[in-house]
View 1 (cartoon, rainbow, N blue to C red):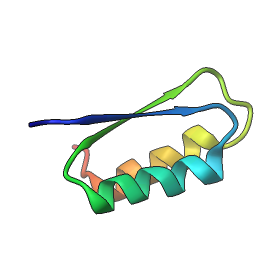
View 2 (view 1 turned 90 degrees about the vertical axis):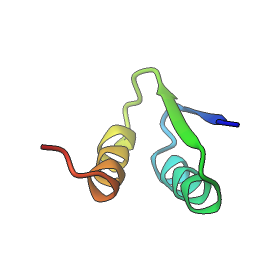
View 3 (view 1 turned 90 degrees about the horizontal axis):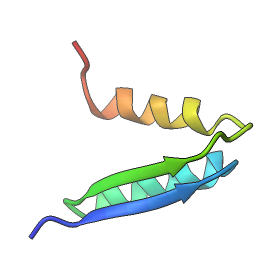
Length: 57
């Protein structure tokens, strides 16, 4: 069974990165992060995680 973990994020840059890493490390599930215009660096930090996990061509 495939499970999707939805993580809400709004100005939670440091916490959301830690949360996403833990979910991906401890499960084989997919993570969906929902952000509605954070004014901190949440998007930049999440983008770094994605580029480290996946190779985009």
